[in-house]
Length: 451
Ligand SMILES: Nc1ncnc2c1ncn2[C@@H]1O[C@H](COP(=O)(O)OP(=O)(O)OP(=O)(O)O)[C@@H](O)[C@H]1O
Ligand SMILES: [Mg+2]
Image 1: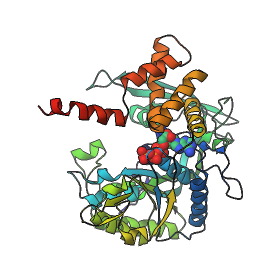
Image 2: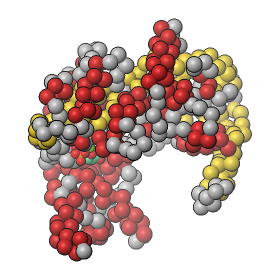
Image 3: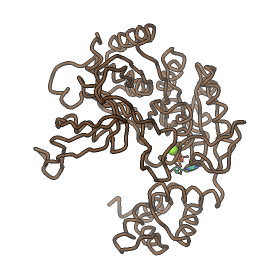
Image 4: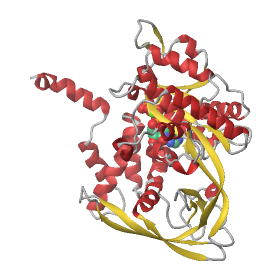
């Protein structure tokens, strides 16, 4: 049974895989739920954003039970972007888990097990308890890096010196290698306000102090006051784990595997049941709060009939995340059957879904989105190059155009240019092909490939 909360490692942040969508802060709606032209990092696609806004309201008022969302539209029209925006609107701390339907088919796990683990990763549990903590703004953080014992080309921290400051006091600490590693993985940096549980050395990032931050993209919602009093105190420590973290902690058996995080294996249903019972008890006596997040399933047409019916049932259950499916297919055969249906989704599941559609972008919108990605990646680009990238985006896809940015900027800096020019874009365009070029080439060389 789970008794000592300190046994559990906080790993909530590691499943974010949304680098391409880091510019998105929300749906960009006004108070009447109307989409603004450009807001919260989103451009155009107004109907879809407004529909998503209405759904967020339904969720917040508890009226979405037993239902899910489908975002349907051509490739590169912002389906993933809108799913990310929905999760941002629902709350900052909520887990957002992205699963590509093809990941369900692995040699190690049953396909329904993959799906159920993803669902449980998408449900956060915020735990509270009185602990001895260190609290303050990070004003100094120096890692002492040494070569990895088994892989000298990689460096890991051997220890670190941390200096924390409150409004009244400043104190320095030495962190062990393990704790320093955790700091690095969490990505905490100077200027962050953090709380550390002394016993387990678990770190909770509370926000940024905002002192001396000048960069444009500081999210004002992230700013927190610098704590007062002494660095060391007894305080309610709040941190978030997921139901899946608790499952794993509860199923942990001593052995070699646990050295490697003991992930990627099946978990017994009794273990899950025990975790659910425990969490419900914690919720009842005020020690925990449930935070249902978002499970985003991409490439929905790759789910098969068995997974669909499993999902159908899961949506009904008490502890379910918000499920968002995405599809860029029209009519397709439901995998595992001979039935053709819209998006390859069975009709009984379609009935439960609120459907949002996305449409292709105009040239101006493509340009604006590329401009936002340019700013987000701290790249400087000449107007002519931006126009050219926009043309590429129109001709091929938005995703292809935005993907050219990073290599173009690398080449620009190799050439000693501060700004990306049209010639660098042309250069990388010649190096990397888009999907349609690639399939054309494959067709052309098919004969040779086969021999
Ligand atoms: N309306 C928008 N505003 C700002 N950025 C956007 C918008 N739509 C898409 N993007 C960005 O453009 C890129 C491509 O969009 P995205 O991946 O969301 O498309 P998609 O519809 O999910 O494509 P696919 O069908 O290939 O999965 C991403 O970096 C995304 O964040
Ligand atoms: Mg997508």
